[in-house]
Length: 289
Image (cartoon, rainbow, N blue to C red; front, side, top):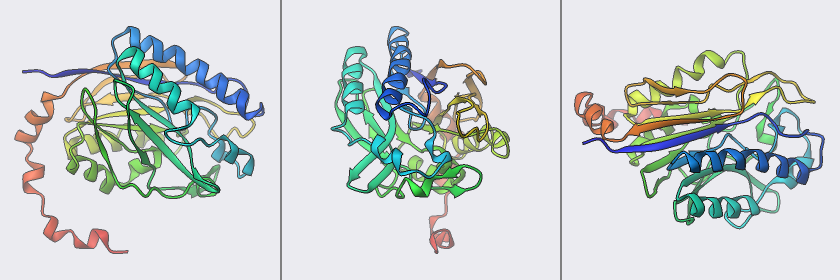
């Protein structure tokens, strides 16, 4: 018997300018995203996710303490509280990726998960933090995550989160599967170049290896003044067989929607018995420093 869940991804260009005040930047990007949140609600979307740190630019293109002031508390900050209201309004689970302040000088790249009744369920903190040229200076801004690989029991599905650079590491993707994820969302900020051909390779591979659905989100456009490259969009959903269900455009702000049949997870796992045939007793070398 099919068990469909309608899911959505929001990809956008930067609203306003990265040189505006931090409050202007947040307000402009919140306003743009809310249009798509309401569009998703009208379309009957049940689970929705935005792009990585959706309230502003990908500021990791530079190393400047100005951006520390854009971090918010979770769940007590204004963005999560606003999305709790939207979740209640639309009876929609919302994954909210923002810059988190956990205390003075302690910052994480985080996604909060809100249930369809507006309850805050918890958060995932990005575990793998890049620091490489050109323009990905994330260790200046983020501590590595310390919450493991949680899976959240929402009204519609068991949801996991893996953020951007995390997707290059199969270990966490497997941990999410072992923890019971049915859908894994990967909010990202990735530019054309070396990673683009991997964009539609790695995550479908994770979906196949772990037999779950993946929603991959990437922002779009070129963000001044850094101009580190083109954020090439192409947000997508893929199924446990690695097949694309819906793919966004390369250069447009938009909502991408797909109906995911969660019963397919059981079907695929019964055919490809990867969880049965795992050999964790032989994997000790994988966790050696």
